[in-house]
Length: 404
Image (cartoon, rainbow, N blue to C red; front, side, top):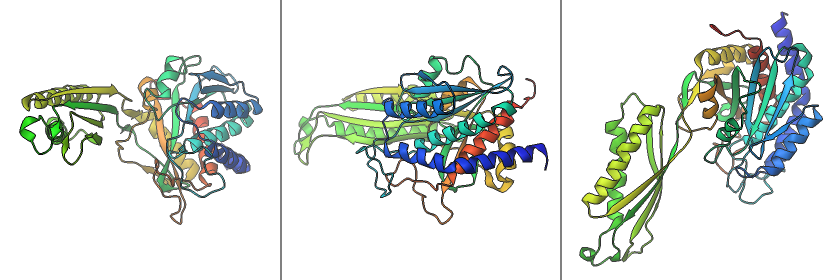
């Protein structure tokens, strides 16, 4: 057995020994979810867990937590590992002993898995700290689910400084893959996201006398349909773009035309230049079309997360290291995904790799998508995740990237 295989075996043994503790941590977090930027008890719990490992965690961005694991020669190289801690405003429908005790709030996106897994990784790496050179920076961030994103606030407060990480790694649950597998994609992987808030104003009145009114519902309908040509005719067919409207409020009645219509939606893409250009096209279309029909319209665009870039050279190393740990058949290349993640902020500032952790059971259980009230995972993922990230971290600490 060579040195790499010996280290893998040691990590797998530690991961197996710590699996029950990791599952218990995840179940505690799952039963006590907190919404974005309100993760007070979660942050306190994470802080105490880290202190029990002999670390010295520090608060950041109110409910964020950062800690360092220093190996031999701490200044040699730093690798940052990130987990998010917030939950979603969803009423859980799972009937499990660790079901959410906070009505209307649920860890439906797996952030309890991310946090417990990173704590498991920390537990492994603290036991190996005398066997590696460099520093591991643990980042437990708030507010991934809500603009402006906890990552942006952590970065503003210096989470990528003192020490500066050579790379940042993050993992996210992926129920489309069974536990024991992971997936990743080099280059542009996830989309930017912007929130759209549109108000169309006309003149309401009786539905039986349309000639006396200026119907904002009709104007809004034209805008919703016409806006799709920005994606179908303005964007290059080689450039992924999504424009979706998910909320329309026209608070009239069967015989009442309202004065206003309120519309909410999202615009997503994988190119920052086209993103800004599309905003201009959308504003011009909305205002011009409304005016041409005698109405007025106001569009608010809330600038959201940037696109997520997996640095190709780093991602190739992570893919190879994951294949060594899990076996080549258990590491897959993923398609681009038009969902958004505030890990993208890290990827805009440093070499970063965001990979997906399989969580589905082999028999098909635990296959519910994230952001659903029945999302859950196979506990096997809580042995795979911590051990894999520990191995990837050691590989990155020892890496010498080309040209660097």
